[in-house]
Amino acid sequence: MKKSFLKTAAVILVASFMVSGAFAASKKAKKEKKVKAKTILVGTGSSSPLYCYLDDNGELAGFEIDVIKAIDELLPQYEFKFEIFDFKNILLALAAGKIDIGAHMYESNPERRKNYLFTDYGYNDFSKYIVVLKENTNVKSLKDLVGKTAQAATGSATGAILQHWNEDHPNEQINAVLTSTLTNEQVVAAMKNGTYDAFFSNIPSFNQLQKEYGGIFRLVEEPISTSASYFIFNLNSPELKKDVDGALKQLIDSGELSRLAIKDLGSDTTKNINK
Image 1 (tube, rainbow, N blue to C red):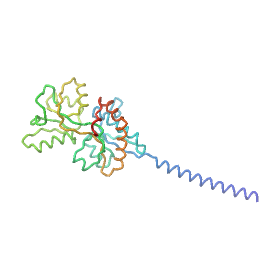
Image 2: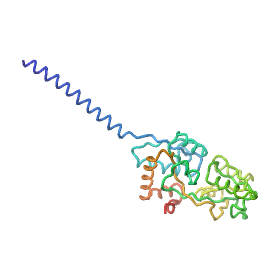
Image 3: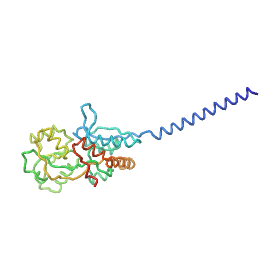
Image 4: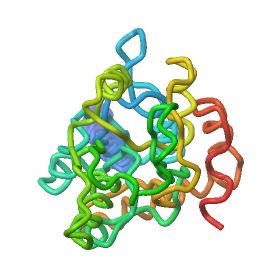
């Protein structure tokens, strides 16, 4: 009788242990599944000094990259990973579902708003100015570029401005050359040899260019566009956009966004864009 009781008790104990172990394993699996970070692919570039470029170690660096990394730190439910594209191909990759976020100083315009979601908050003043050689004192506005050659990136807001100008002024055409994103060396060489009469820049990039090349350019004082840059998403990603908006707002309110701008761009380019 005693042996039978002990045997029965042992069987019950083993069974209870198995059930308990299975339940614990199930709880653990559910917990791990719940907190597992979702991979988010971020499309960006690698040839824009100050913003998104490869450092001496071949790693992505710049303001654009630092802001995305700071957002990632605030969103444990996601793990952001970068994918490098030419600027003109980022929107194509986003539309095709190959990436989840476009991060390359994107400015807002009606055409883009039809096809993509934008963050509620801008993260950088990206107003654009005409840049010419220092000795060129005749250019003071877009109208002064009529009959001249101006370079802009394919798919950029500046390229759209040039195209709209030509559509609206059939008898006053600007020779708009739309290219892939160029390095500073390529821009300087093309300006010096007369391939381009003008190109366009924001103030931090212009200051960096002047520093590197001895002040050979002149920035036309009035901007041709006043805008901010935003992160963009597919139309079917409202939850991701909402989460990024929340993190971006935290960076703005805490002053971290301003700190990153000063570190990477040399000045606080964020202070007036969301007012």
